[in-house]
Length: 122
Image 1 (cartoon, rainbow, N blue to C red):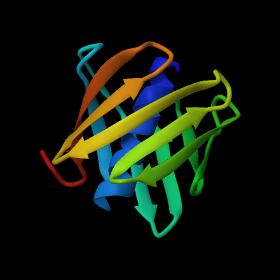
Image 2: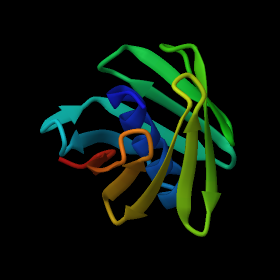
Image 3: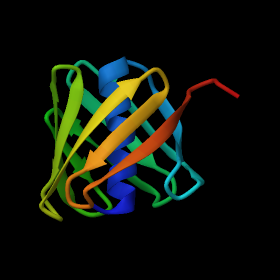
Image 4: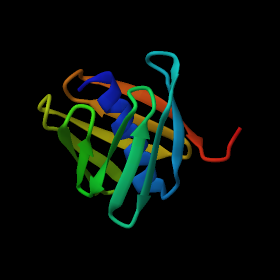
C-alpha cells in the first residue's frame, strides 16, 4: 500500500469509527504532518488530501481515491477498520484509540502510527 493510501485510510478509519472529523494527521513513520481531512455521516465518507490536492470518498464500504482513480474498501468489524486497496492489491487493518490510529499494512508487514488533529484543535 502506498504511503498516501495508508494516510487516507487512517483518516477515513478515524472518521468512521470515532464519528469525529479528522483535520490532519501526524505520520510517525515519516515524521511529517499530513494535510488530510475526513468526515463520515451515516455511511457516506468524504475527504480531501491536501498534500496531493485530491478528493476521496463514497458510500461505505467503497471509498474512491480520485487521485489514484482507484477504490479502497473500508469495513468495520469488531471496532476495527479492515481495508483492501484494489490498485495495489494490499490489505490493512486499523484500530482507533482516542486520537491515535494504528494501522497494520499486510503488504509491508509493518505497523504505522498516526496522531489525528481534530477540527478546531490548535
